[in-house]
Length: 281
Ligand code: NDP
Image (cartoon, rainbow, N blue to C red; front, side, top):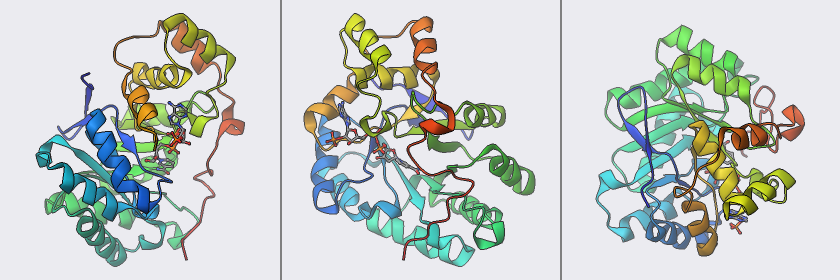
C-alpha cells in the first residue's frame, strides 16, 4: 500500500497518512509505534504535551529504519512560548526523540490570551530552528485565520502546515480556506472525532456501498479533500484498517454528503483556540 505524499511550500514532502500518539500512555507508546511502523506507517505525530516523546524515540531506534524514511512531528508545549523557553523545550524534544533534526515542529496552541498575546516572537523562534538546520520545517497548530494572518504579516515567514480539528462533524472550512489562501497545508486532528462519527447513518450507508468501514470512509473523505491525517489507535487491527484506505475512492457526491454533516461550532470536540489558555502545571 503506497501512501501519497503532500508537497509543502518549502519543497519538503509529508506522507498524507500518519500515526498519532495523543492519549497513548508512555508505557504503551513504544509498542504501539513499533506496531504502526510494522503496519507501514512512516509518519508519527507526537507532542511534548503527550508525555511520550522518549518512547516514540525508543521505537524509532528499535525499528532501525533509515532516518529519511520516517517523518516525525512534535509540538511546543503551552508553557514554553517565551523565546528562551521555546529554545530549551525544542532541544529537550530533540533529546527525548533521540534526533538531531526533526522533520516538523509546530506551535501547539496560539494562546492569544496568554503571553500578552505575543505568539509572534514564539513563531520567530521556531523559524530560527529551520535556519540553523535543527528542523526541516516549522508550522503551527490550532491557529485561527487571524492568528495565521498576523504571523505572516509580522514575520513574512509562512508556516508549512496548520494542524487543526477537522472531521465530518466539524469541517472547519473557514480555517481550511485561510490555510489554502496562504499555501499552508491542513492537517486534520481527531480525524474520526475520537470515534464520535463512527455510527453516523451517512457514513454507514457509504461504508456498506463501498465495502469499507465507517472509519475508513471518514479517513478517505479527508484524503479526497487533500488534508493530512494521523488517526490514533493502540489496536493493531484498527491500525491496519486505518492504513488500508488507498484502494478505493469516494465520489464527489459522497464527499459532499459527508461534508454536509458539519455541525459548526457544536461539532467541536476540543477547545476553541481563541479562548483556550491552559498551561500545564
Ligand atoms: P482520532 O480521531 O484519531 O480517534 C482515536 C480514537 O478512535 C481512539 O479512541 C481509538 O481507539 C479509536 N479508533 C481508532 N481507529 C478506529 C477504528 N478504525 N475503529 C474504531 N475505533 C477506532 O483521535 P485523536 O484525538 O487521537 O486524533 C489523532 C491525532 O491527532 C492524535 O493522536 C494527535 O497526534 C493529533 N491531535 C492533535 C491535537 C492538536 O491540538 N494539535 C489535538 C488532538 C489530536 P483505540 O486506540 O482503542 O483503537
